[in-house]
Length: 456
Image 1 (cartoon, one colour):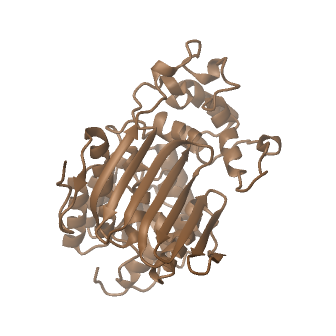
Image 2 (tube, rainbow, N blue to C red):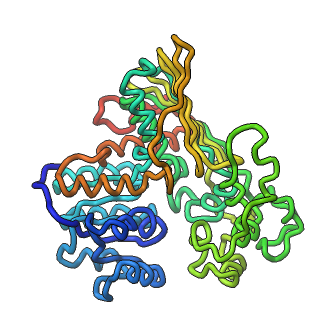
Image 3 (tube, one colour):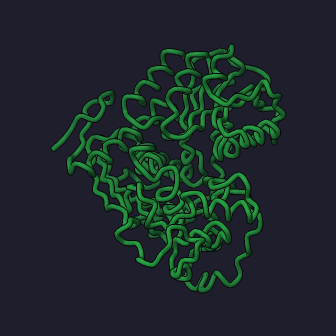
């Protein structure tokens, strides 16, 4: 991107004011108005639209039900933040680029490879920045790993082992009962959840992939495994509520799984009985309650438990087909071999990484309430903890860091930490992994500009 530097606060529009669109990035502008402001919003849900307008002081004429209505206007701002559902990213992103907006687009950039390529081409053609929200590049933990690697502290990387440990309750919420429960209607879980992780592998090893394999395990949360005496909705009085980890009443009315997860720590003897001292939830307004109802009161939550799929028996949702576990093996052009595991039955939400090099090893953990990384030196046998910047907040504090970098790139004309041209490689790997797991084939890439072409 080559544009003249800008001075003064930037103006932005938001397309899709759900959890990510409203709560992940733009609150930074309310805290630091010198960076910019939001001047318009497009959101199909009237309650969300009204709440967003009130938060940002928008008049009725700056609020739209459809992205097409906002984009039909003369360009209103410098940038557009697009956080619509996965299958609806491409049209508003293309429209915004064509109308002269710089675009910050939630991942995944698109749900098929041709659309990803079309977005990259549109950005290049328009001369406008298109950045994908690969926030983990901005997390202090992963930045510390990258700095250690680039400084040669572990020598040449030989292998990377990385896992995304999706907690049992998060899987049930998002990938069984939720919007991402069906890979055809939304996108494959390996793309929707784990293009972050595939981007990390690409970024950390510093080369493009040349070969990929993948296998998966189908979900066990299906009708064939449902207890015969379980009702269709958990709130109707399931006899298995005391023992079922997926009980929707416990999950949304009491938030027990979330609170237990937030109180877990590493180390022996910790959390022998965490349920004894966790706080009780009362009118919790955040995720995951915000995903099931606009009314977080007890009555509102109970209504959602009786009337929406979030209250259904997890075995009887009916159209969920996301895998329970998937393994991906990648060989990169510089010889690094990487393995990635995504699974749905973890006791604790988080990611774990091990990077082995010719001179040392990095071991890291990335969780909701803590992040840590240790470097082990082969020659001396010494180990040291890497120093991390403040990691409070979502994604270890990465969300506002990404947004501030995007704003800085728009203002100065420089390239941000990652661009659509870089991000597309994680999507290529995700599409390849889904194809390989379904068809039992091996993916291969040729030159840096070629898409998936290989097979066994």
